[in-house]
Structure formats: C-alpha cells, structure tokens
Image (cartoon, rainbow, N blue to C red; front, side, top):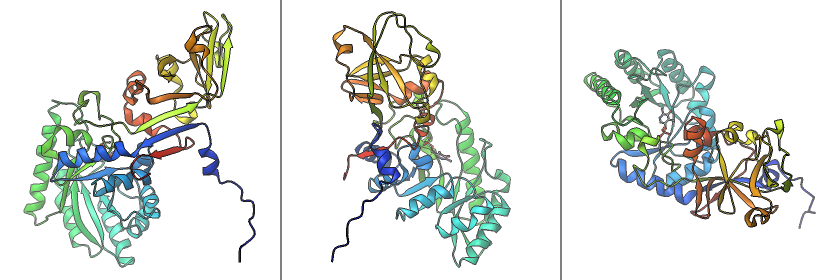
Length: 395
Ligand SMILES: *Cc1c(COP(=O)(O)O)cnc(C)c1O
C-alpha cells in the first residue's frame, strides 16, 4: 500500500542551499593535509581540532574525513560542539579543550568526552557526575606553562593529578599545555615552556602518575618544535591547509580546503561621475560595469575589506570592490564599459572571493594580511547562512 504523497514544505537547510552563494570544502585537500601531518608527527598521533564548526568548514564532515585519513582524535572547544559530533554518530575520542562549567558536567560524562580539568572543584564535580552515571570519565590535566589563559600552575599539578587518580569516577589519561608563540620561529619562549612542561611531566611521573597522553603541540608547534609533539599533536589550522602564521609559510605542502564564491545577481553600467552603494563614496571616473554579488558582511566578508585593497576574481582576473560592502550584497568593479572583459560580465557568472578561479587565486592569508588579522578569524567568520558544499573524497 502506498501512502498518498503530500506536498512537503521545503526545509530551511535545503532552501538555504539553493542560495547563489556558497563555500566549497575540498575533502581531498583535507585528507591530503591530514596525511602530511600524520606522516610528520609519527609516532605521535594526530588530533584534528574541529572547534568552531571546523574553523567554518563543517565539523561533522571534516571530522569524518580527518579520521578516515589517519587522525585518531578530535578536539573541540566546548561540550556543545562535541554533542554535534556524537549526534552524527562519531565515536572517536573527543577532547574538550576547555574545562566544562558545572552546567556541562553531566553532558560531558554522558557524551563520553575526554575532559580538560584544572580546578579542584571541577575534578570533584565531574567525578561526582561520572559516579552518578555509573561511568569513569577520562581526564586531561591542563597545566599553564606561560600562556596564562587557562590551566593549573605547575606547582599544583601533582596535587590535582592525585585528586583525579584517587577519584573512583575518573581516570588520569592526559596532561597537556599550550604554547602562545610556537608560530614565531626563533622565539626562545617556546623552549622555555618546553622545559617547564617537561619538568611538570617529570614531577607527575615521580609522584607515580603515568598519563598515557602527554600533549603540547598545536599546528605551529607540531611543524616547528619536534620536542613538543609528544604523544598527540592537536592540529587545527593545518588540517584546513592554512599556515599557522606567515613565518611558517610552506613548512609542509598543505592545500587550502575552502573556496568562497557566489553567482552575480545584477550587472549594471554606472555612468561616469556616479558612485555606488552606501555613502556613494567613490565616483566612477568612467562609465563602469558594476556587478552585484549576493554576499555581505553578515556572511563574513568584512566591510573593511573594500577599504584595504581587497579584490575578487571574475572571469579569472582580479577586480576591486566598487563601493561599500553591505550586509547581504557587495559590488564589484568589473572595468570600464566598452572593454571586452567588462562587457562580457553576465548575471550568473561565478565570482570567487576566496580560492582559485582559473590561474588566479585569492588566499585566506591575503585577507588576513590586509585586515590585520589571522587566517583563523577569516574562515571562522564565514557565517552559517552560507551553505557549505562538500566535494572530493567519497562524494
Ligand atoms: C585551537 C587550539 C588548537 C589548534 O590550534 P591550531 O593553531 O589551529 O593548530 C590546539 N590546542 C588548543 C588548546 C587550542 O585551543
């Protein structure tokens, strides 16, 4: 028996996906990057850091690809991000990089997360939650060796480890630290921290603790400081094919995974002397072909990019913005009317904001440099309303 077909209202995700603006995530690039990292840090394991929706790339999809390519751990910033991965059926170990707040203790236990702890109150709180749930939760003790963001003082590490080890609901699985200047080659502070961390690990061992996983490396440290790789390298930015800093450019043959593009929605010839967009700031010196692109600052294209020389790719060539970037749309100067390239511009043509088009490329690092920020902030800033298209491996 067949049920009568009822018209179904389209869901928000599918409607959004038809928007003529998109992020393409290349999973061949992600897999290749993970292969490079796995090879480089061996015998240490790779923990793929997929916080902030995998730096804007899509956490569930990236996690699957990274695990298939040889990463054995995942890391996120908070329990809620881990819940998304578990709901998608991912069973790999997930490290939470911050201490869960009391409201998150039960979730952290129920989701079987590897929790970072550094306060005694959280040790007893998570321990009690684990006992109440009839489980044992694996703990990674965070030690502050000089970044001064979170973590126990080195002098308190043994007492905390004792408390974890003595708790019936907890297992001391890891000890870790984080390095604030590993992306600056030659900065002696990282060597200083290496010494401090090694001393902490030594004092834990002397006190009878033997955590299975000692870890201290983010991408930069994994690339630049082999002594910090230990058992696990927590790699984020490198998984996405971006260098941790300009100074570490090209250390590994990484390939950027993300493209940000859209289709032109309007083409107009703006007469000489007229200006476009809010503020009517820059009059066109000659009759100019201006294309409208359905992406704006609410999508993660910073408004300031137009003021600092940002360019986009149209028909394989770099073109400047034609005026102020607005919330949902931006305008591109496609050249003087009458020039063959400008006159060929048509509604529906692809405009690439980040990534390749033909032989031309705009790198995330270029935006970061123009805007005085880091690549991380750019990709994390591409908002959820830009649909992600996942291409490559097994797709
Ligand atoms: C975000 C984060 C990482 C990953 O850093 P990348 O520079 O992206 O590799 C590693 N460790 C901690 C503690 C982090 O917060």
